[in-house]
Image 1 (spheres, rainbow, N blue to C red):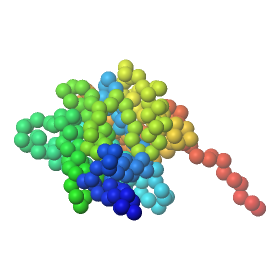
Image 2 (tube, rainbow, N blue to C red):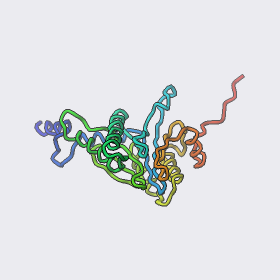
Image 3 (cartoon, rainbow, N blue to C red):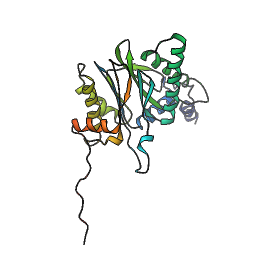
Image 4 (cartoon, rainbow, N blue to C red):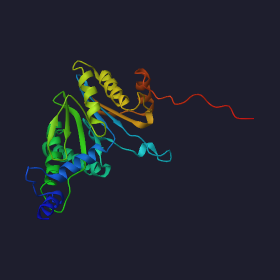
Length: 254
């Protein structure tokens, strides 16, 4: 009985390590991330690509209200996977930090600096009683000193820098696809094609433009740009992964 009680204490208390050095609540937060639809980031020589799967659960839901890609600053975009409400809190925190840096130093914040500010904030919720970790992972992409940078935030508060990554559902399959097909010399269009092809690989080989989010931050302009449905559809058609639905209509019975 005593062993079970101790196990429950490790399980419920964010401030208590288990005997093997684990924080169970952080691991549960990672499981929450896995339940979110996938997000992908790709770093190319010309900039950063962010692509997300934003499947709409009901035809009555306005697809534009499903937000998984956010502008943090003119030169930084963020994609999320996991609890949407948690993501919004971290996005708002990131936006405040970009403005604080601009007012304090008179210059845009670095992508790495912003990522570490966010992960420092996340980490505080892994060692404070009465609070739970953030059940979300973020992909932070942008331009820093003329170079594209791409980072991931983990629910533990650890930042990682990547050339290409996936978070959320089907991460293992998506990561395998990215590792097999990533090309460091690819341009921005090549990065878009890779991200969309990866998403299509776990969605029966095709995608609808209303169920995909796409944004880029290019080196030349150092500006965040989110694509509309027409541009997304154009890229899906170019890569032959547009879901055209069932065009065969049944003739009405007489």
